[in-house]
Figure 1 (cartoon, rainbow, N blue to C red):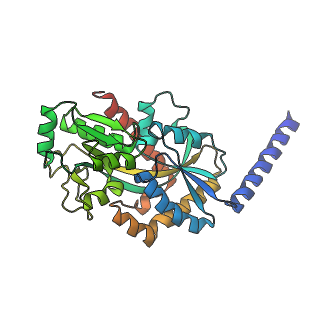
Figure 2 (cartoon, rainbow, N blue to C red):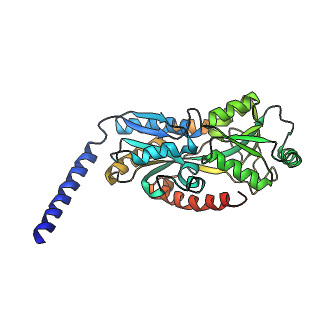
Length: 321
């Protein structure tokens, strides 16, 4: 027994030394970042902005891989099953990394399948309408929707996405019955709203603000406590008469369970440097997105957000299903 214990101790020490050496050399090759949606949506845009700056700190490129489907669960299944060596990471949000466990209760992964790296962005949800929709403001829209139950359709990036949660939160706060139309990402939903194929979209400011600026769609309301600097004419939910509509979200980076702590620490440091850089701050401003505060950048904070939001959205989604 003593010999066995000594062998195990030696093996554990050797493993620890090998892991430390691996982490010290990391990264030696490009890193793959999985984005759970089609190109052009909020998570994709934020991922590309942050990845470009992280690559500078890490000395290796970060390759974006868009894996759409099932509200992000297809992508996160792949991420959960990837080698835990730091060369595959994923970007998630409150939808893909919290609400999905209520929407898809038989997923092949759990929150414990991932190691949180860092929160990299705070986002703001907007409801926007096709430019020829008859309602001109929020109260007109609610009245129209109540007179036409189920006939108004709003697009989102798929059940389980943060945009889906914006839709659900909005409809529940307004007390209206609308048809929610899922897409494989925010960009195709917005394209259909611009083309008039659907009545509107629930989206984050990061991906819809330019279309509002260009008058391709009409912003209805932003679910935040203050107006956005880049969309100063767009009323907040409280100003528009719907204070219960709150849609402030987040994006965070995750690695597969078992990724060595030293590698997670390197990725966290690179993410911090990225969101604190002038390049990312400027791009985020243009996207009506906010970088996390210094006290929000620790990996533990992202883990706490996931735990909080799993319960928060369980309650939202189980009410008035």
